[in-house]
Image (cartoon, rainbow, N blue to C red):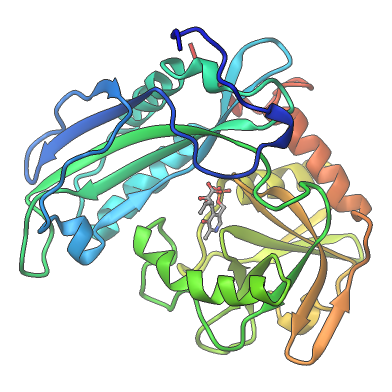
Length: 341
Ligand code: PLP
Ligand code: COI
């Protein structure tokens, strides 16, 4: 296949799944030194010592962004500086040398530019951009690795939840927790995700799209969904769990809060009691992969609360506004989209 050939992809039936692409970005750093300039190389397997810190002790972080074709013909990424900053916070927490915002953004830009043919047509998905930051050096004792690698690869994706804007059924977990105070729930540590796989698989086997986690102290306040933040709307008030260090500070979450406020809704970041959420008018989850996904029903123990088969009016309004800004179908007055060039 020539470089400019379009890949053989049915853009209309894409899901959120891995697709090998052409090129990836790789940079190296030794503990205590500066990051070496990174370079683009052909996408492929990487070699790591079996004693690498990331393999043995999970010293690693990831990020997720989407590059999309916009209405003005350009390719845009949504607020990547926020992902860069979040990765820096995570690096601090895990004892990894942080990658500067400029280096992060340049790596993302190069990774998109060298995989342009994989960017789906406008409105048919996105090129998911996945930066990884990991302890690549060998270490046997539990301590920060002596060497680090920063990598960016990409993959074209469709909707995270089957059906896109179709309301999903979720189950609140009364058995598993995602994060505890003082832990790593507030950063995008790779180790936060494996413990959620079995709970999520169990919920899916029962017909639910995902799990909603409760806080690990009171078992009463909603934290977030497996890979997205939680919102509910009651009597016109848009509420989302406050950031207490156990919830991922989502870029979509922050953007939805600002959009909701600009649209004139009262907005609250607070403890969201499970009883309150289950009496709300509408609920949805929000994230880069999930965008805004409406929640049609929630099960908690023996109770099932139905929000209905239709997307709620506030959820729809927020979705329309968010996606319009992301694809520059309306003027991006907040300067949230960055052109990849
Ligand atoms: N919460 C978790 C656990 C996530 O993995 C994600 C995805 O990144 C989010 C929330 C949403 O964050 P963002 O909107 O930055 O993608
Ligand atoms: C994202 O929304 O970017 C995520 O990280 C979700 C991912 C775990 C699939």
